[in-house]
Image (cartoon, rainbow, N blue to C red; front, side, top):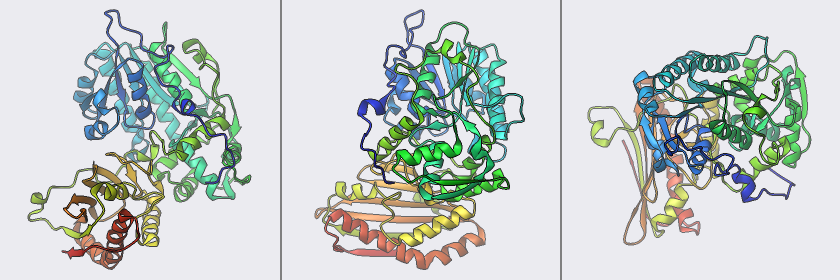
Length: 530
């Protein structure tokens, strides 16, 4: 990315809203207690940004999650009450709703496969039932901006249905309807950013001429926080959008201007179907195909704010709504200083293994292939860990970059996640973060990084990188572990063995050399294969 805009955003601009502003702080209950808020989707793109702002605003926060370890690894993880469970399970929802005053419904199942609409319906019915049973005072749901009186794309129809289900319950519900959300790490922004930066000329579907009203992520958070303390009758739908209305092609060129890029030439083609367009987006951008399809489908309609009802529920933000160019500037600013709070690309991927790696004693009697390597170094554990924790993304894998890129491309073409997802930040890793075709399963500073493969492989695979202190410095070690599935899994490992020899030995040597800081290849290397 090349930018000619020297007007970098300030720290105050990047952190707004904080949630501690007087107009956004919690209203105490009649007994003086702070309201208890349940956030469904707390580890998602918006939920992960909303929770710390709710805490700053004086709310008590509870989160329902299938992976409590991921929440506990977050900076605010120890400040929230975590309930282990699934939003689609009645017992989990009833436990999570107990004593709750306000529910934020930020769950969307777009990456859950073809039946995401059915799953969204199940969760919505479960939330509505449990909220009514537990006497919840308010539900706040973020849906999608859409036109009335037309046949909607599946993604927008599902979001509308969820809103209708929640509005039909006796619990007062504020359904906020947003269009394209612009912010560092949002799927819509990443799609715009990569399409614009990669392609100087782009053939595109005719929907690039449709009208869209984008909204900055900061303004979405402002409205979500404001809806919690709104008074009066809140039951209804409220469109939210920024001050600008564009065609999608104009949004891309608006990004190009802010990023210091030449204007892009976009040709609207009437023959490109949403299916073809989603595959094109999946190959060119880091947005997974499962997420690209509903995003592309939602662009089939002109989606603009229909009325100003939101102004009667939540007054506009002080200083006004954020313009599109300004929201792009702020997003790029966060990326440049490596302060991307959350990323939609970290979303859970359907159809990939999510169970943790079995401990070594559990391997008895199972077929398992390993590649283990060790190397001593004069560098201390902290220096080695700094190198380990920056692996992947723009840094790469310290060896055979062409082979890593080729493997990622093969996975992308096969319908997998591919390596274009990169990583949210280049300097820090926490449990649940994405690193190219991997996901962080364990991150113990100066000790162990364990990555679980999300690429398409005939089996289950993990990669471990660790460091141990020694009298002379430390010992770096790494281990690739693969549990094959059937004959295809065994053949896959055998086929990859020659490449492993090149990739993994290069990783060991380069990681140690970088940690030592002089590019040398000292130390002692041992390779073990089974």
